[in-house]
Image (cartoon, rainbow, N blue to C red; front, top):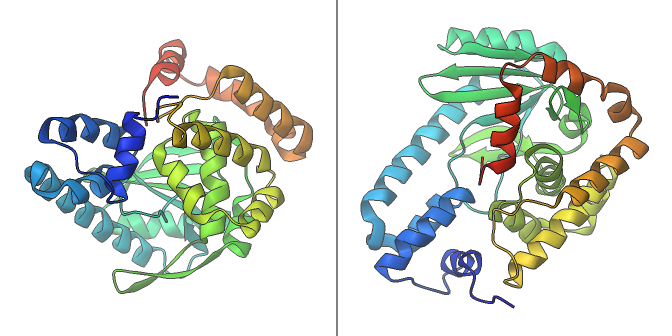
Length: 291
């Protein structure tokens, strides 16, 4: 048993149970970045990495201000912030939003009026950008043009109003975020982050299991829990890449149990054929340490 892995020490720091030396603090900072826990980590180590903390706090403020402006633009549409609620504050690389398909034109128009431009239009996603801030408008959670969860069900049945910096916005419920974290990690990213483990450790419940089952992603939640157990026992570092047979088992179960997934699976071939340098991109995806 490892017992003293970097992942466990990072968790102890975030939970206020361990204070690293200056040299170790810099090593753990790299692990925190990879696991989307950089801000939470820097807030714990405080003055040891003060300059980095000030910069990350500035980035967090910028991200939240942009998020509030996007939600203002989406008023009047049926939307929900997606992969947004987390047990600790963090700065994401983009803002993911689920939105009803009929509201997409209105949302795009409203965001364009605020200076955003369409970067990539795809079957289930429209990516928009303004001065480095990226918004992904999803009609369905998907990868490679393949839908793996029912976006409309998430919006209609598993979203609620939350308060964000004094403003009311729409976001997925915590139990739905558990199901989303598992499906996203296994089906789409093929990587489990410590942030994913925090989500399931803090918010896993009978209701979360029920939501995962309703959405057809219960198998991914089981796989995520297995990985997180390895991390908690010091037997694996995060980010953790599930073994090929684990991914194959998850995909096979999805194909057998999800009619929609099975029907649109050929979209993956269309997606691959539409991409340049696809071999390089696939290799990069298979060897990356985080996302």
